[in-house]
Length: 187
Image 1: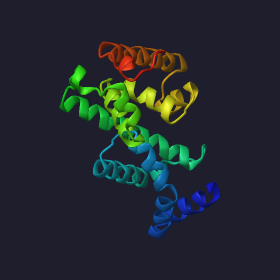
Image 2: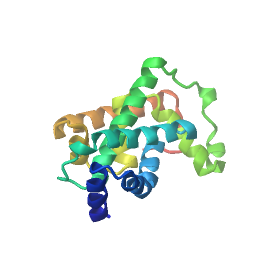
Image 3: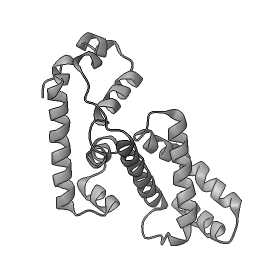
Image 4: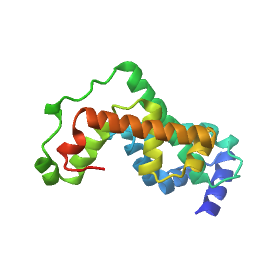
């Protein structure tokens, strides 16, 4: 795939628009999954995916080929998702959930995976965008601390501190709402 990416990138830079369509087809599913981590609303997710590919198109001449194209594209997607979260946070401060917002443990066990995912997404949404980003990359995208640092242009120690503080804040939010007890899980 990487060789085909290089061929298509070279063709794109010479003006072949069909080559960029090929790049989109090849990477769209992965970028869509990544952007779904940032937004659980289908239309907004599609807009974010489109924005990733527009930004990639505009920056294609800057791609040096030092790393696989997929990594470069994921980095663009991460910054767009992070920017989306920051805009959301600026537009409206999220309120902490009340006890009534959380389902009973038996209800959670009966939920399908989509609803469980939505519930987790809502819990993560109570974090600030930076904390949410580091946990998303660490646990959902399974990036290492070193990968996150490289992707976000942070130092490794700064990334570790951010991950530690994000986990602590998420635990605090969950504890404040008795979330862990309500789902029947104790760490």
